[in-house]
Image 1 (tube, rainbow, N blue to C red):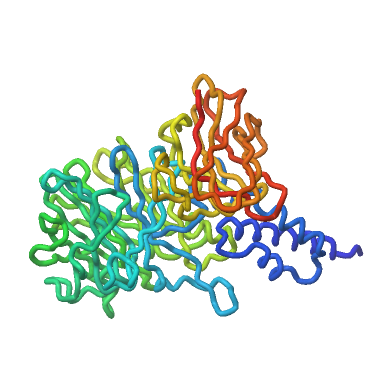
Image 2: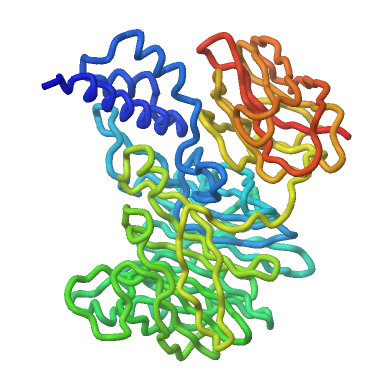
Length: 531
């Protein structure tokens, strides 16, 4: 019988390569340390060097041409959507890895989360990373809070001015609010305390004061929905969901919270108005045991309908199964339904990225799929998948674009820019930790009749290198190469340009980074093509 050792070694190598590529894509883990920790003595030094060299050549989590998860260079949970001037802004709980004393990723405790993240898109495939909002703690906008979970965002014109409101849960003990003149901040705490506490009328018996959703009706009246949890022995009808009127200023509450009788309520309130009907959506609980017919199964998104934003409500059914049904990794189910242009969408989270990285330990990523309302007002059950939603419009390469606008990527990180240039909007993020063979890509780019040149803005401390401009694939047709010189410390963004040729029409655009060193090459700030 032939020895199985070569087969086992090859299998081990493949597993290690996949895991290392995955972990490198988020960069919260050191790739070299992953190789060192996972190899068991049968991997040679030469092979380890080859693994390290190639570990950034493949995307992980969001694989072209898929649209889900919406971003793969970081996590994001509990999504909430706000549409402003033709852009969708997604506000997320800012999941980041937690580590044990030995440096290994441990289960997400959620109690270290004090920031929310923001991304936005015009086409629902290319997303701009706007970074994190420091909400809670001594350095946050709301110094009284210790955590920031499950955001909800709203816009209202007050005294002729656009005002934006960001509601968040301080763990499960209360709900706070921040305000801004822009969907991107800066955000401030207008009241210096929670908006909703256990002293708020009508919420004394709510197990978990969290997971807000906010709705501004056509008449200008606003409402906040929140709550969750299961009182002892009341899994079938917890009565822990609430709705309450918001004041005209959006930073106060009016009257008493009213109970929403949501069967098997667990968490995750949502609210929408469609064709004059109000739709309340929520996640069902995981209580064991048989359930009556027409009851929501565990961990699914269910919905109720009313003729008034405060009820009474009629239970209708479920619209989205638990992520475990679709992706093989479960957990809680959190969503938001929103309208963009003429269509309806659902954003929800799943552990697909962390699963692909080999650490499905409660770190979640936002997904998008379409929602279909039937003529009778019912909602067609949603099929979650990795494909996502159709691209809505071509991407214009002739406008200056931040490099942190991406559809897909391999090997990079993002961080706040250190550059200082009035020509670039600031503050902003840049693509960083760029190494040889890393890449980012923008989908559905329309070059029209052609482009003649390309300009990139770069900063940072780095060894320098090249940006290859390729079509439709990291190894696709080369239309231009930008040389980036070595720099000790570029505070001012440097313009580097090249002539391009052979490009027109619609393509996916790949920026492939090349260098002669294992050190970081440069930071990528922005780019633009010229006709």
